[in-house]
Every structure is written in structure tokens, then in C-alpha cells.
Amino acid sequence: MKQTTLAAIFLFISMINMNAQETAKIKITAGSASFVATTYDNATAKAFIALLPITISMNELNGNEKYHSLSDNLPSSPLYPQTIHAGDLMLYGQSYIVLFYETFTTSYSYTPIGYIDNPTGLKTALGSNNPTVTFEILNNTTGIESVEQNSIEFKISNDGLLQYTGYAKKISLIDINGKIVSSTSSNILNINSFPKGVYILKVEGKNQTRTIKIKI
Image 1 (cartoon, rainbow, N blue to C red):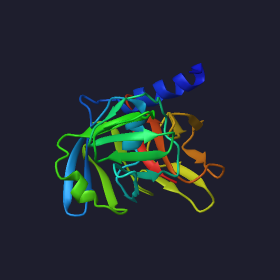
Image 2: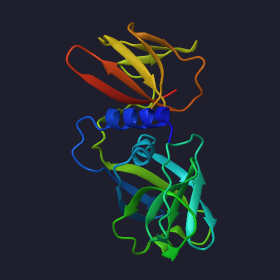
Image 3: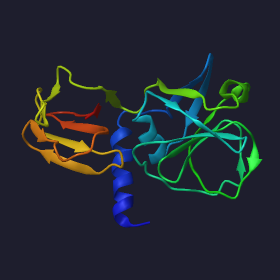
Image 4: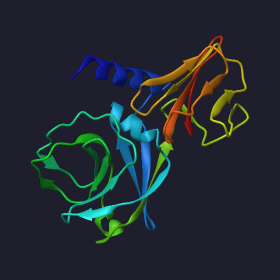
């Protein structure tokens, strides 16, 4: 793996591990059934968690899995698991979220995101077609504050300027792969050239650093 890629992953991991004490759990809901999943302590899981909450339509495949293609790529470190277990949540390639509802052997490689603690009833809940599935954080141990759009602390103007209204020695905008795409010692960032999506706003103050999930 290239050093630049490793640096980006380590930056992302260290950023969202601030104040984290345990692995995050997420709630997965299909129809009237909900399941609790434990996530792994890796960059892929943390990048996926940063997208939550999301509700997506998942496609049926092979009689053992449901998948969805995200609009953004996630960091990946594919492994060859040999055996897939019912309840496994994985990333295929860099953008395909896959939720398995059967146990079977495989020749494909995936990056693990997490696993449902008790997958009993998962197959029935997902059904045989293309279900709508909601993923949300059950316990927020990532250290990331979730702010969907304009708030008291920051505003995005129509001309593409992000203004942080609190005190900051430095603010940085970080993409989902952990890359700093812009930073400034002032309180204003020009975000005109960045594609719409989920980002992390890193705010460095006098005595603390905060990380805020935002959508632009």
C-alpha cells in the first residue's frame, strides 16, 4: 500500500478516535425488524459510520446478500474471508455496502465493516426483493458531532463560502477518505470546488480540537 494512502487512513482513524472508548454499535432496520451490529475498529467502518444515519434501497443478489452502491468511495483494505456469516456487513470494492443474510463460502475479497450480533430473523426481514434499510448509530463513540447543515456555529452561503462563527485558531475540511482538502487560519473556507457529500469539519481552538460531520 502506498505511504500516502496509509497516511490518509491513519489521519482519519486518529481524527475520529478522539474520546472514543469502545467500538461503535449501529442499528439496522428493515421493515418492522431491527438488529444491533457491532462495528470493527478500522478506517472503513469509521468512514461508514460518518455517513450515518442513512436509509438506502438494497438490491438482492445470489440468494444470500443485499447490496447498495454508495455515491462516494470509502477507504478499503480487502481481505479474503473464505467463509461469509449471516449478519456480516462488508464493503465490496470501494463503494458497495453488502449485508449478508446467509452463511456460505466465498472466493471474493471484502473489507469488513461489522456484524449483526444476533442475525436471527434477518433473512425474513430483508425479504426476497429489494428492501429499504436504515442504518443509524446506536451509541456515538466516534467523537464526531453530527450537524446536517447550517447551525449556530457555521453557515454555508449561496456563493459557496463556509463560515465558522465560533472561535478557531484553524479550521480544516476533511473528506471521507481522511484527506484535508482545505484549511485556513481564518474562519472562512471557500468550498465552491468540492463535490457535494459528507465531510468532517475540524476546528482547532485554544485548548481543544473538535470534529463535526457536515454535508455540503
